[in-house]
Image 1 (cartoon, rainbow, N blue to C red):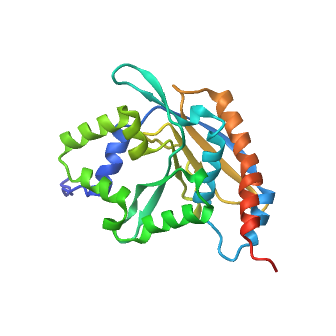
Image 2: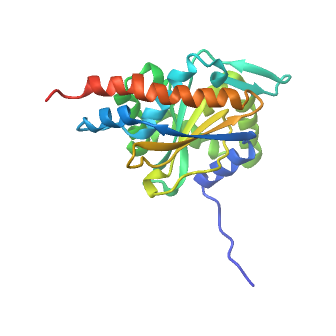
Image 3: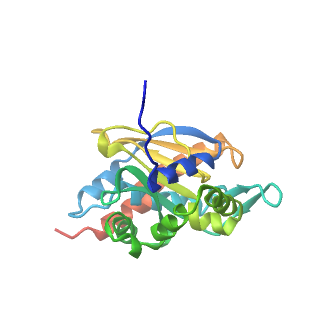
Length: 247
């Protein structure tokens, strides 16, 4: 049977490269009970999305959990590299580029910004011209390189702690809940990845933490998810309530 040769576009090349450099991730799940957060969010006329909320909550938890800000690096010898702060990334879809391929967008230190600012960065990444979004502009500059040079750039970026933070962050947030589905297994080149499901009628949400088992173990992951739930119903809900317009 004869088939058809098809070229690989830049967005799909990026996914292939990321899968090539993905680290061994282990998954733990928790059903979050988010009564107070849902109530606070419902009071807002303009509500921040769940991705900025999760990004800021995780970065707040990472202030007290240094393993969440730690990489396992191979060069020049195997070692851990701890960052002073978290760097959040988010997967986005750009309708003007490719509606079926996600891109990684750098949000930065989400715990040091108001939720509205994190939301604004996310929306700019989705809708602003590519040349005006530095993280995406840099990404596509790399993707235009031939495969051997591209893989060499990624290899250096993944094994130099500072550069790894710039390109891949310490936590990535992804979800397809808006399409009525949930991600069960995911791979990424970063040490931590969160995928979350739909908000249910009983105000619960399924959340999966994918982490690099070389850095920490399941007991730490379980503690992180407990703290994440506490922060979502605590500091994040407080911020939403404070930003609500009084009746």
